[in-house]
Image (cartoon, rainbow, N blue to C red; front, side):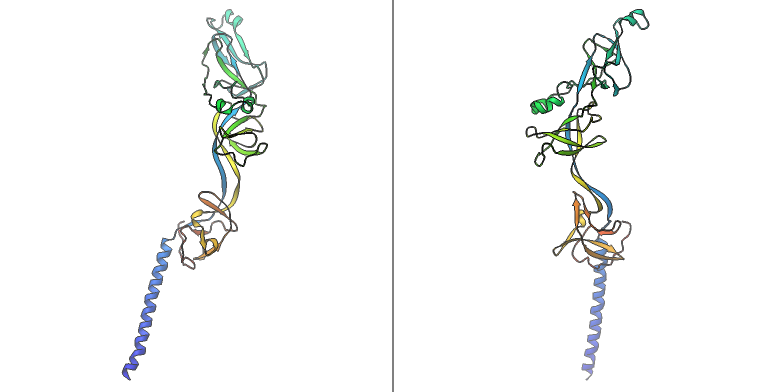
Length: 311
């Protein structure tokens, strides 16, 4: 009889021991899992789709040369607009001392040959890379031309280029170098950012060698006359605004794509719809900005009690 009484007691203590050990292990697992999980806040942002591409600009430009050797004095500031026939500089011949009658008799005003912006700097390609040549000449040979940037000093020689006039009332054109022209159509537009100007440029010509397109901007592009070759941003897809999470937070559970989010101290899996994404972030539909998201997702996080601090 005594042996029979002891068996229920052993069972009681055995079950109690197993429950205690299980509770300890569960608590240890929860703490370990919580401690190794990393969180980040979902935040409002924008997913952009753009890449840097090389552009070679063409404008209507006319170089202006000195009719004889002498010292030159420019009128106005670099980039100032002059009307046709207005003086852009005065040229004093060599040997004429300032303040003499000879100086007054022989000084010559250098006139603007067309209306436009006057720049001191030239690159030798003003009559080579033109809006007409971009669409009518061999682009490979045309773009292989090297620049020879010059800025005149105080003294110039006969025939030396002292600057150029750029017609800023005529739209700028450019050759845009690309890795592929697939999907681009003549007559359609591509969105480009040059400096601080973002515009839709019309595609005039597609080229396979060199690979790229000739585009027509809607107006003169600032900076295109002084830096003929430069990088611009091609916005090849419209941006998407919304709530962003790191792409590492996305997790597939069964057949559902979602994220583990933290709410009221507990981690829950939430099915989500990705509106857009780039290399590092995903834009999520109907997600609250500022909510903590697990960025190291794995199985076993559902229902995890976590203390999220100092994200």
